[in-house]
Image (cartoon, rainbow, N blue to C red; front, side, top):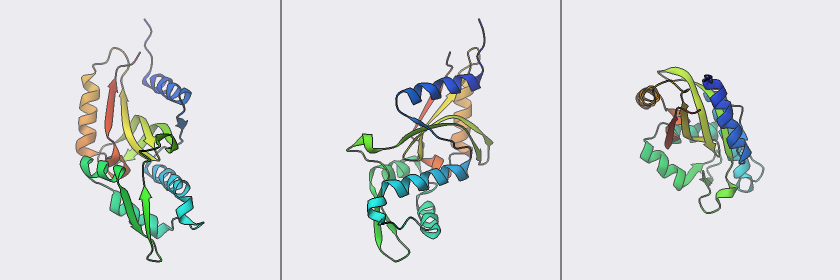
Length: 177
């Protein structure tokens, strides 16, 4: 029996998700994660923005307001409309998910996103909806104990998952073949 590398497992999962319509996103760190999220926000709210994309100060203000919430607080933000005060003092109502018309959401998948939290390391596979990382997959090759994945995710929960990663709502642990 041959042993498949974790990298090969990740690519297999990524390919399967692409086949059902997920877009492969080139996201490798927190900076590119935020850039992707900002672009999707601009695209999704272009009708409300009237050609005036989020300024750097508006996006920074938004990130300060939505970052590092509890799992419950993050889930609330995902469900509800979010009010952002623009630089001109106008209020803009943002919707992070379209829960009525789910097909209007943008589904992406990325792998090996390196984080610079207390524990530095790449996440195996991340599923993003509208630029927010809502699902993490921790993959272990055959022959490794699945408890290694549990330990890793517990450590992430204690030491990582800050910023946009605080929107992670679901973990999948798998010793995939």
